[in-house]
Image (cartoon, rainbow, N blue to C red; front, side, top):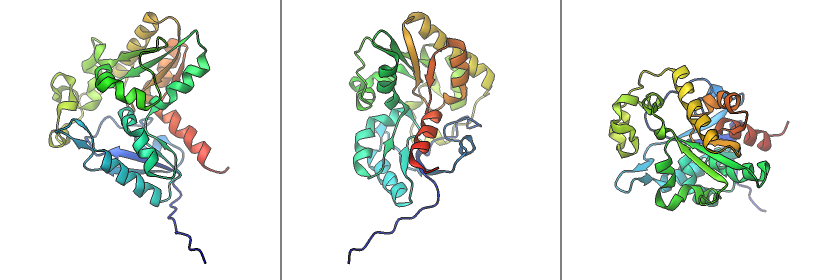
Length: 259
């Protein structure tokens, strides 16, 4: 007689991999804020998420935690940072449930939706980080960065980037480059003088600048999981389709549960 392995099921269809970094501006509407969703989300905190000597995510730890989420009964796994897309293949191959590591996975879909004559813009926290290592994270998410139909704009290009960084611990981060910090330094960061209205104005201004520079833009994909808070304002200001990570999680949930 074949034995069937028992699986736990705590009623949480979505599992979220969250690096245990400092507390950013987690408020209603934030990607990692549980009440943002009208369904339960099982959050798995990853202690050793970053290898400082290599300046890269600890893939083995993410895989271990993804397997734990699968054992705990979730139906799909999502990430908590757009840059986790650089391990999309490893995570997807490690478990037998779907993995949506990054909102960047939406870009190929958006490109097919807007037609060949239009571009898709990627709004990111840092275009420099997104493009490093031969655009590894983009390629891992099925994006051809050299395509003339891709436009990328980073918040670090804004003259008001210091306001944007307040939700990350702002003034505590020298030159805003928090990727240079080790876990101990990150843990000591405190939330800056965060004003959601000011941050919204800054990100909307950057989005509008991207549209001005790319009048043939057909849609915008928000890479950063700090950005869903401002998706509605960006849609209103640009009149474009705007894809954010919270909307992706809700879409995935609807695809994994029975009504």
